[in-house]
Every structure is written in structure tokens, then in C-alpha cells.
Image 1 (cartoon, rainbow, N blue to C red):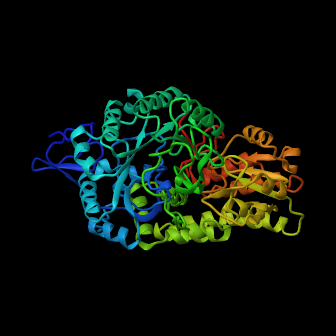
Image 2 (cartoon, rainbow, N blue to C red):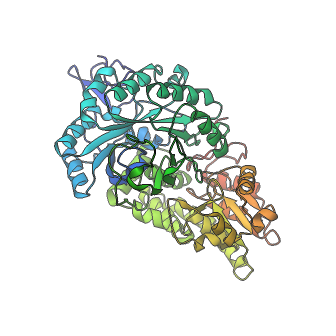
Image 3 (cartoon, helix red, strand yellow):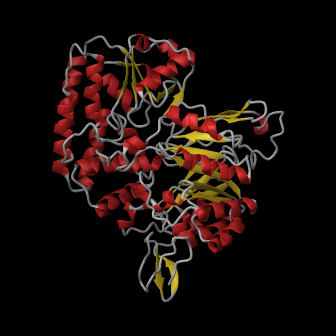
Length: 581
């Protein structure tokens, strides 16, 4: 029997499942294997989904299940798309529970995202019906690979969609396990013609500029005013780092796309101004936004009623919310996937490689509400050891946990003992471009202080996730002697110098050429921060410290990952230490 929900069209014999593993043939009917099995449910701002032109600043209840019908390289939601399928735990959350939660939280709607609703089609369809009955807006983020009939059943029930387009060519879709690109563009056209609010997001992989440009041209043929979100590719999983474009390269592509579309936005690029909504006629900034974690943004300011004096009628659907929602901890958009990867990164060092064991621990974290404590404890160097011990106990790996803590504690205590009474140079930590400052309490700034520096980030009196944009005067006033670039979402050192020159920034760090980039995930997200600490200590105090970083890394990798360190093989995965070439 052929599954008629998505265009992959798996043939399912009685009792069998297809590519997504989320449906089965039971007595000649296609049914969900895990109906109403929600993994997360919490309120978010709509800009973290992300949607930028639909009820701006609105508070929505975000839900997701597990599984995906695609298999894309470097997927940010790999955890939800595949690894959690090995757990047998059921959430017990019904659609009625979701509706009640949305109403109790004063949300104006519900959004299904993080994983694709195509793998929970009947659950989502029923949820959409109930949302309509309760005057709640309802929509989703999806790869849009539905069959035409399946989509037509949904269209009368939904208000908005963010369609994630993998590329223009059939080849890009085949690489994700699909049959070709045609169904997505057909469905995009159908949604637009049906007056569903549509925003398009597309991945920009270095070397695939034509894929993005051709996609933009197609979208433009439907309307120049469809919001077009460019997701700068970040090599999570084991994707090769060579296919990650820089922020500067991505901005250049967005400028080209603006020849075809009026509203082009750049994500995964801390410090960019390409998240702003700019009037295509008078060039006024209508909405000013900044980076808010992977795939997300937050609004900083906006013109009254979301418009200027030019003809911008229909630019935004729905009213701008007067009150913004602030997500605590790891909540908000795709940030929760990073939280689960932080856990994964620790478990890998403890020898956990089995997906079922991993999934059981993740499920425990969600059930017990440990995420809030994880967010706080994972930023403090000493509390991080408590986190390791917590998961070592859960995984019955206490011995391995003690070994990891002892190794890291010895290095940390040694560096602290040497730097305790020495002069501390001013150090500034950015993510992406130099004017995006990491929050003062984050682990990166605590590494700076442990290594014998003064973290000027702690002087900034406001916070974002994971930081905030600062002004020219704020940067100059702090006058850092050293600048470190995050190893999570970074920019090349050469681009940082060019940015500072273009924006007229001055500081002792620039005068003395002291901008340094950290290796991916050596300062956040994994126990490898101990290597980042040694690297920072070398730079701040070369007269005191002379760690052989490659040697230290090789020892750490062999001991806790079982592989040798290879400086040419890296990615931005929290748990994987090497990539495919």
C-alpha cells in the first residue's frame, strides 16, 4: 500500500514502515505509529520560528513531535528527526492538552516546528481543527513535501506556513532522500494562491549560490513581497566545514537576491543588519532585529503600526503585539536542540554511543525539567562538573564521569592558581561580527576570567540569546586589549578586521592585532572548553603559559573520544569531533 501523505510515496506492506518510520500499514490503512506524542510544548515569540511578517512579536505555543521524512546533511534538528525515534517513551500529551496550554499561556496561536508535521500528519490535522474551534491561529514550519491531496486537506485549517526549501534542483532534494524539487514549488504556489500566509526559508551552502538565486526567482514570480529567509549553513553533525559560507559572503548573496525580492533576511549570522525589515521605497528601517540563536531573531524596535509613510499595506499580516514574550533558558525556536546536543556532548565523553540509551536520557531531562538547571550550570565552570556528574549518574557511568571531571579540574585549578594575582588584560568576546557581544555570564567570558583576563562583556547591562548588539561607542569605551571570536557561530579573523575598519572601530586589540578565533566548540557546548581555556591562557599570558595545544588536544581526544586529534577535520557539532572531508 502506498503512503499518500508525502511525495516520497513509500510502499508499505502490512505492518511495515517507510522512510520516516512514523507511519505503518495496519489492516490496509496508513496510521501514525506515535499519535499525539509531543516532545516539546512551550510558548515562544513568532520571530524564533522564524516568521517575520505574521503577527510580529506575537506569542505562540510551539510544539513538536519526533521524526522527519528527509535526511539532510548537517540538519540542526537531527536529534528530533532521527535519534529520538529509538525511545519508547510516550509523552501522554493530547491535542486537548495543547489547546488548553495555549489558552492558559495567553498565546494567540500554535506553531508546529523543529521537526516536520508531515510525519505527524493526522495529529497535526486534528490539532489544527481544534485550534480553529478555539479561535487560535495555527501553522507550521515544513519542508513542504506533502502530496497535493494531503496539503489541500490542511489548507482550510491553517493560517501560516514557513516552507524550508533545500534548493532549486532535483539533485538537492535527492541528496535529502526525496525524489525531486517539483512538489515543493507546486505546493508553495498552491499555498500562496490559497491566501495562506507564506514565508520561505532556504539553506545557503557555500558553492550553491545558483540554488538560492533560482529559488528566489521562482518565489519572486509569485510575489516580490514574500519574505525570503536565507539560512546560512552551519555544519552540524558530520558535515564538512568547507561548505559553510561566511557571514560576509552570505550578506553579499542577500544583496544579490534583493534584485528579485523586497524582503530578504539572513539568519545564523550574529551581528548582521540583514535581519531588519527595510522599506523598499524610502529605505527606512521598519523593524530592527538581531540574532537570537540558531534560526531565530528578536525585535529591537519598530515603527508605529509596523509601517512608514510609503505604501506598505499588506506588508505584515496581523497586528504587532504591544508586549513581547521573553523565553527563559534554552527555550525559543531551535535553541532547545542545542541544549540536547550539550547533553549529547557530555555523554559521548562518557562512552555513550547507543542511540536508545541517549534518547532515554534526553527523555528523562524533558520529563524532570532539568533543562532550566542545565542552562545555568553549564555556563559556570565549577557547576559544569556537577552537570557531568549528574549525567554520569543517569547513564550509570560514574567512573567515567569522575575521570573526565578529574582531568578537567586539574587543568582548571592549575591555570587559576597561576593567574590568581597577576595583572588581568581587558578581553572582549563576540559571536560572529565584532559588535555582537556575548552575555557576560556565559561560559566563554568565564573562561576569559579563569585564564587571567578581565571580561569587559560583564560591563554590558543588557542581555540577549546568546548576546546583544552593541554600539560603536560602547565598543570603543570598553577598549579591549584582546578580542576572542566564539567557536560556535564565528567569522574569520580577517573578516573581523575588515568589519572593524569599515565601521571605524578602534581598540588596543585592533592596534596590536590581537583578534583570535577559537576552534569550533572549544569554548561552549562540550567538555572541549578545557582546551579553549588553555588556548585563551596562551594568548592572554604568553609570558606565563605555553601549552602545546595540538598535543593537549590529541591527549584529550584519544582519552575521551577514542580518536586522534586532526586539526583539518572539524565541524560545529557539539558531540562529533570530526567531519567528512
